[in-house]
Length: 270
Length: 193
Image (tube, rainbow over all chains, first blue to last red; front, side, top):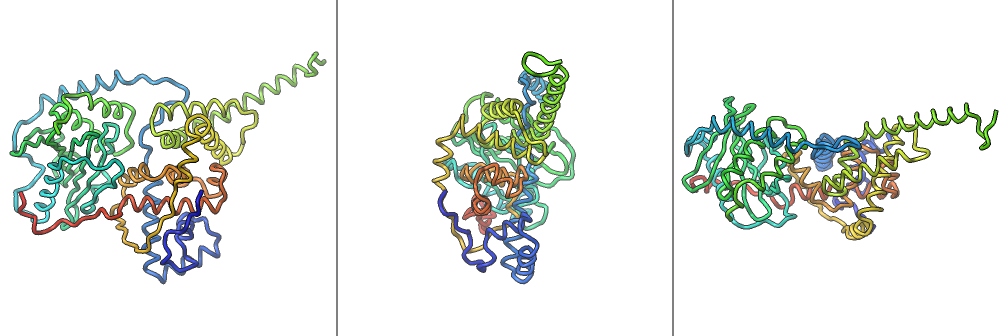
């Protein structure tokens, strides 16, 4: 292991990044903890670092597992169960699908300038054909309270690579951009809504973008893509609707269903 | 009465009873920590099949152990050590050494992190993207909730290395979450569509 130098040389000698981490983890002895607490109370820079560290630590500690653990020393057979379940739900949704090019997930054009600007960025992102590097960090526009509701679609080989939110009015939504291994792009828009119609609605933008939208728990959800097969988008809409509703770790059944989406319909036309 | 092996039937029954109690205790520790062990195995191996193999291997080894710890915390440490050693032995010995030597010091003096960007999805993806040696310490301390001294025992490293590695791992997480990837929404583009 090479020498591991503290991150921040700008900190006072006694208040290194390591010490702040140990302070947040409550690993310091009472005397040193009191010294750090005193320094933090007098120094805004230290206080900002401690606040960030505390939030990072708390978020990591509260993070549910990426997927459920298999039962100990037992074999699992649930693929059949899920496929039947998906078929049943898909059949019922199919009956309720409303065709139309106008969707309720977006208000009138020009009603909110920042919202329009954000939508333009989302459309630009969806239209981009380039494939981001595999280890590229998530690109942010801004943050929103809805950010925590974005689902993990990695089992469907879709990486979250782009996030943005409308910042002007508190409570405005978030847009997550996912990319497949070959550059296929999927957008998920989450905006506040008072309605409770959970029916998945189908639509197409003039530019050819396919959209599936629904409401749930005070929010309007819409997934959209230029290049994804309509059947695959339908399947993803079903799974994403369930994921955002449960707000817990992905179950084995959902993970299998996400994986199976790659075999639904034609490959992405990028 | 003594048998040819030098054990009385009563003593033998007592021993069997003791072994069964020991097995039950190990099973309890395994079940109690199963999700955490699974999560750790999943992050070590990167896929569900290998993770399943690894936790099952851990269970088999723990159940076969002649003297597992009785104390709850010691048992947790023991199980994580078993799983890590099994992984190093069976899956990734060469890779672990390679990753450990590939770690580079971080620098950065300007504090420009935006706490609003720290959310479950961003932390989860950042954890998946940082160096394995950093991912492991985050897994042990933040996700599994071990104290520094316990992490040192599991990873078989000095306490000071736990501190420095963890602090750098968190710095790496923050870099992945926020570094140079924030862009404002330009107001002059509001009529772009």
